[in-house]
Image (tube, one colour):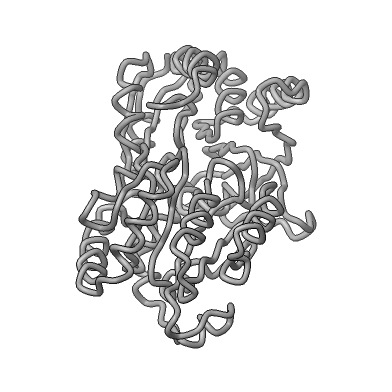
Length: 378
C-alpha cells in the first residue's frame, strides 16, 4: 500500500489545526497515513488524529541546539527506512530540517520530500542572527527537497533562488468558509458569556501569549485611549501572560483586559467582536487573521510579511508599525468611530477571503502532490 508521512513539531497545535484536510486527501487517494510529532495534549491519553493510520510520538525540541534532536534524527531515519514512504510532507523549522536530513539518501530510492515553510525565520527586518543561522540552513536543505511550498509572497520570491526541484506559492493552508458562513450565534449572548456588555467596543486578538505576538502594544494603546467603553480579549496561552497581567494592572486597564486562554470557539468570538487586532512581529500567513476576515471583522494589524498578503491598508483594515503605540491608537480610533468604514472593511474582507478557501487550497496541494509523485526517480 502507498504510504505518506506527515512531520511537524507538535500534534494538537499544528497537525490537528492545519493538516487534517491534507491527511484526508491522502486517505481518499488510497494512502496509508503516518504522522510524526510530539504529543502536546494536556492529557496525553486524549490524543486523537483523524485520518491517521499510524502515529509516532517524537519529542521534537524547538531549539536547533538541543541535543535531543540528534536522537530524533536517528529515529526518523529508522522509520523512513522501515516504511519506504512514497512521500514525506514536513513542516515547522526543526521538524522540516531533521526530516529532510534523515530522508536525503532515501530519495535515491524514490521517496519524495515536500517542505512547507510556514514563515521563514529570516525575513525583511529580522535579527541578523536569524539570517546568519537559518538562511544558509534552508538554502542547503532545499537541495534535498522535491518541492518547497511557500505561503506568502516575500518567502516565495526569496525561495525562487534556492535549488529545490519545485518552488510553489500556495495561499496558506486554507480555511473552511462554508463552515464559517453556516455558523449562527446569538451575538449578545456570546459577549455576555465572556463578560462583555452589548454596547462595549470589543477588540479581539488570537495567538500564543509570547513576545512575537506583541499583545502588549494593544494593552498600551488601550491605556492611552483611556476609554472605559473598550474591552480587549486575548485568546491564547503562553509564557508572557503574567507579564501582560502585571502590565495591565500597572496601566490601570486590567478591568478591560480579558485573558480567555486556549479556545475552541474562535470564529464565534470573531462574530461577536467589533475589531480584530493582530500586532505580531513575525507571521507566515495567519489562519487566525483569515478567520477574522471570514467573519467580516475589520482589522488592525502589523505591517509585516504575511499580514500584507491578507490586508491592504485602508481596504480590509489598517496596517501599523508593531512598535508604534500612537499609530495603533490612531488606527483603532479611526475604525471605532466610523460605522461606514467598518461596513466597508467587512465587505472587502468577506470578498478577499474567498481566494483562501480551503477546498481550493486542497485542490492546489493535490496537484503539487501528484506532480511530485509522478516524477521519475532521482
